[in-house]
Length: 367
Image (cartoon, rainbow, N blue to C red; front, side):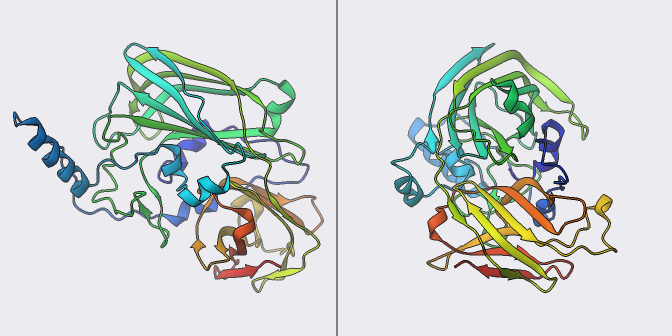
């Protein structure tokens, strides 16, 4: 999900923010610098006894970093058993299991994880496996909410899941903790030959909610990237269309009337909204004449993670959103971000920020 963020921008339709609420580039693009190591090898399949072949193949796959995901979107968002138990009475997790087959490729609407302002939608793709190291994509993607009034408030991005999640040190790793041998040759397919296509949606309007919205998704022609401009070499032609009503939860933690200092720049946190997969922050951020908005060089601290009450840290989990001053002359500042993992809001004890311009990591304890 992380190496694909530049690609996501090619497909992304950003939401229309409130007046003066400037959209910012996702500064988390800097968080991963992949170090290339040994290239991975392809698995060979000889004429061996089936049981022996299975054992050897699985052993080689684990050693070389294949089989990067098994639980689909739940691997992508690092969902734990404790998280599933915490939301078993809610409808945060939904598995529509709607399938369409075209030219030998079956695309299944596998799972949705949805709250009021963020939605993650995962499609399982079967019948096509790209060459190792080649990044798959659909040549055409359309994501539309049924209600025309909602279309201006919702933005989206999309990519095939490459198996990488954010590790404790901010480095890309597989969900089971393994580090890929070669970040340039990531296996998008799992052991069953399935691919996982993830659409992430986010909204900026305060009164908006994805819960209960009817959505239509069209995926067209499947292949791999041909060049850095995002052109796709189509391997399988077809159109896979889906329409359904999203479930979800409005469970969240709201803290208002705060006055919590962030770093050394004079910024103050005044309100927090935490939900399972997004955060919304209200701040007062002093303006600095030397800051150049055209270069996204504002002095506002940016959200990076949370600290739980048991001391667990989830750092670098911002997964894109919008932020900026609410008006041209005020210091009122709002930041909204999707989260790259599911959390329990009532278990959060502190927020993590990067203070600017010092770039120091700052922990802000919540009351």
